[in-house]
Image 1 (cartoon, rainbow, N blue to C red):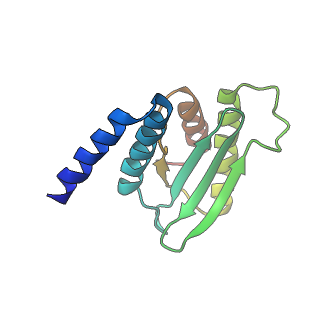
Image 2 (cartoon, rainbow, N blue to C red; image 1 turned 180 degrees about the vertical axis):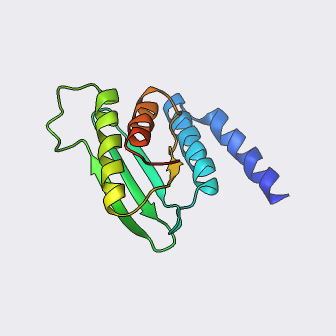
Length: 134
């Protein structure tokens, strides 16, 4: 019963919000939906991806211990002349190499609130090409 009330309140809030606030709320709801299903364990850690307008970040996280096993970013990588898709491919290959050093072969792919589209797909394909399984 309380679940229905919260969704009814949410719908009322959404109808009174600006377009930008509504977009942020939908993004937060998508992210929480994805994170409710994906949990990183010691055997299968979580590959979390964050993509901004200029840079791409990826982390391999063991949620059971709360530790980051490997991380990669395009911030200091001297790849500023590349497009975001190419930066994502670079980060995907780099995170897969770092995962091999950390003795991680399989991961759960956490796309966050983003659709599995061009940028995420290029990161995932590059990571798979380097031997990371998900």
